[in-house]
Image 1 (cartoon, rainbow, N blue to C red):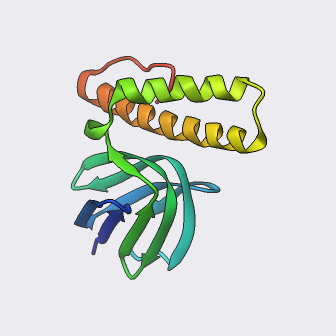
Image 2 (image 1 turned 120 degrees about the vertical axis):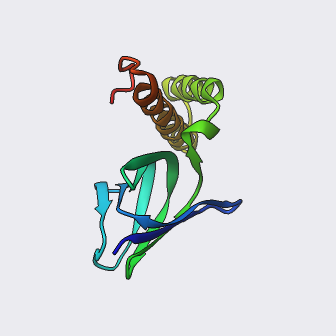
Image 3 (image 1 turned 60 degrees about the vertical axis):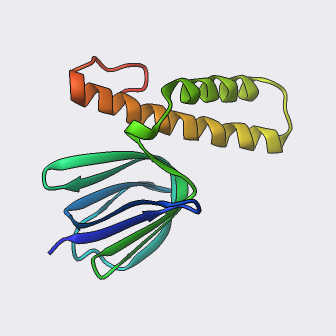
Length: 147
């Protein structure tokens, strides 16, 4: 028995597969692992790296928040945004990270501070997915984002 996983954003169906063995999601209280026969669950997810294991392969995505529902070996993720490593524009993500960090250092309103923090979290998740993919493919040593 395996999981059926659907990852959906407002714009598109990002991922839809059956036969998934394991799913690791960045939950609001830490990483959440989902295996077959998982108890029913509905919770929020936060920006980070989502990992899908199927047939010995691992797919990683940057996800920027949303909700996960687990019910009867079916997992549905309604994501604010989700991108596979190959879809991420590294230069753009790095620039977004730098801009968000600059905004956090400035004296800005609480609202702008919250926006900058969310932007930074999204950019870091994207860059981490790209870095992990590079290391797996070419043995590139770990960078500043860690493993």
